[in-house]
Length: 270
Image (cartoon, rainbow, N blue to C red):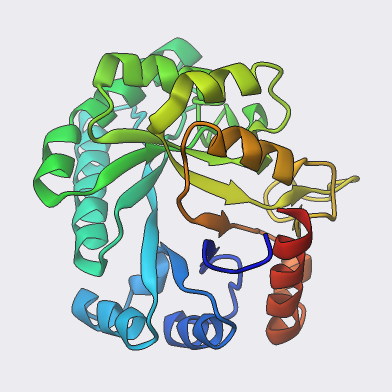
């Protein structure tokens, strides 16, 4: 990708920078899209966060994250729903077109029940999503997270859910870190079609020292970012390409140099 027209960065990727710093640095580098993590909105009115984005000429491409639907009791069920409603409202306030859903899982509950609760939880949000004009983007997570982070682990499972839920306000956020291994990936991306509304890139390094916070820059690992991008674009997707990297190693580095490396990796490997 020679130009940066579609490049977007998640605020989590440059974790040491607060929202004003991240927005200023991204804009200076020629980046126009931001995936905003909700904790970067803390401590200021939503209108102020929107102004920070606007003043730098940046658009919020997604709000991360909602989800965590499985519950053990009615109180948790209600609190999860209310938090997801808040996420939709926050997204609308900063102009983000979608909330990325990390669907959650409870190890005390069988996977089948986790998935049932997730489907019901998303269904209960569709009406509010339509009211505020923000889509729900289901992000399947790698199956190593099926115990406690997400019982939704493949594009195929997302497709099956959306077959039930309808696709007007529910879509898929495809993150290469979580889906690259799937032998059914090409078929399920084709099946998803216009349901794919988000695309996240990074890399899987070998050996991986921490399965949460040791992701690599594109080109540092074994994921075929360009090949997966081409699969996604064959569905008609032409939206932002969001760099989402969790990395203790990269967070500890000079963030200005890191930002330059991100742009180079994007151009050379995506």
